[in-house]
Image 1 (spheres, rainbow, N blue to C red):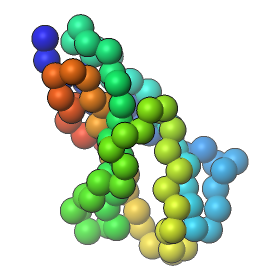
Image 2 (cartoon, helix red, strand yellow; image 1 turned 45 degrees about the vertical axis):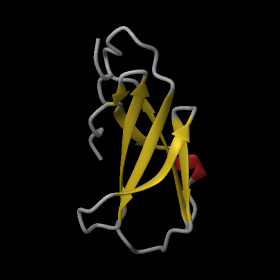
Image 3 (cartoon, rainbow, N blue to C red; image 1 turned 30 degrees about the horizontal axis):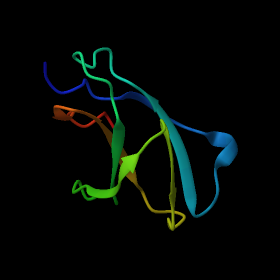
Image 4 (tube, rainbow, N blue to C red; image 1 turned 180 degrees about the vertical axis):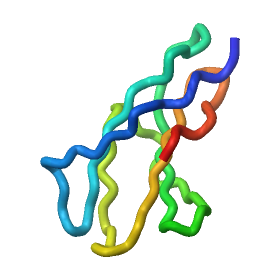
Length: 92
């Protein structure tokens, strides 16, 4: 038994778009390797390639990132957590 697969299909919720925030969803990876996914960790990069953790106790498959600046590029990645640890990052 090991870590879960990375979440997939990060998708913006276009109807929730705002100048200073973005909301996105994801789906669990194909396998959780025998242990239930208990939470998710969301990380963000401001286009520089270095990711910082925004939230490490997300209980649903949706996240709203706030305090963003219009015109800047942001990238987001998500990790799933089960009793064995975190998955690798999702695609951004």
